[in-house]
Length: 393
Length: 143
Image (cartoon, rainbow over all chains, first blue to last red; front, side, top):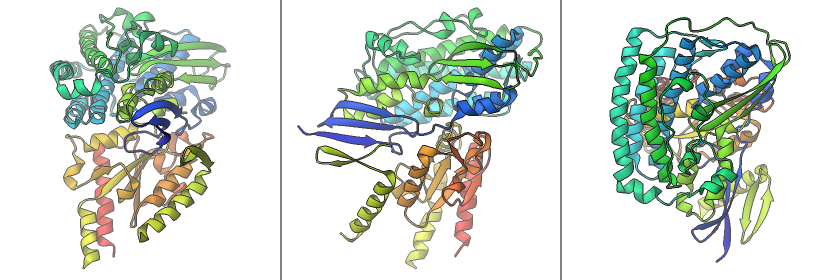
């Protein structure tokens, strides 16, 4: 059978974000896949060097709108390591609490997107409706739904009141009940089982070889979680389990995320019930002494690493960000091989890609079996010309 | 008569194509949140379409990056007339926090003409509904 190369993206109905896949197929089966990234590369790492530490908290939050809090936590932690300050325990608990809220909202978001990709839009509507409850809590506590400006170097910027704690506990009760319903749906609903079981299999050896992170790694039956293996903020004191699955496929990822939701609810409840009294932040100097630090956090999508080097001024000399999607995109290209064309969106959505985190042309014109490279300008003129003729046909 | 009908149907049910030209995803999830049960933009006839060829309104998020610039123009040219562009979010309006980054061109209006601006970082889903309604009202009143 003839091999055909299909370009998918950067703007494509099945993809929510700009990314580009060159997929070579034989009939319906994918034999080769290539990923092209960098479409929303904004040059942030260079920008960090031109801004002060306080300004950088806001920019790190805007690396990605979904895992915004993790990135700012990471940056603040790295700066605190260099400064040698430890935030007060109440500050650490509040920071951890927001991190877990973010995980709940991100996992619900993923559940909805995965439901949408498998043609189960009811699940999308349900889970996104429940996600609004978490966003309400965010708005209640920090004043904004998506970017919170809650973190600061040396702690957090706002305290929570007893009334807010009651509202959090009430929401957590609802979330627990809803999550249990989702787990029932995920384990029993035929639409989900038929569509996800055996799709996008990544073996344990491959997952380790390709350095997968986060739920994708845990779905490949590797028990690794930065929160447990290298506890940061208040995670060392919290009771929770690391969830793994031995099914290795997209269904395994769904189960891992759904069960993690329950763990998150458990942690949030523990944190607000055992919230230490005291200050929420310590004052820190604006200039950071020379030094370097690496900070790791477990973002909803996996391990997120920030490397910071300071030079004694109020601006960092270098800030390197390794977002989880960059680590995971490698195994997507691998898992796509041998899969069905119809499963591409589901496999890609499986790792919960977040291009905003990761990015910071090749135009191919297929002529029988050979590929010819055209510039974007040429191709645009070609397509406009082609469609102009099409109108008269 | 025919044109009047086309215009009426356009106002009653605008089809929207969403395009991310370098956004951090914050605006994108708020756009999808606006279509979800809580806000439900579909009750105004707003429908999210995958292809720009089907769309009346191009909803752009994020600043324009070097790589996406050409693609944004390409997408814009593919849309049928009359076309409208809404810049959604602070960075789509002006470039906001990314101003000064080497790969960022600035707001959407540096590359293609923009009809409406929705500021905010990110704007709340209510703001997107307000922006779309204002755009449609302006279109209805125009000749």
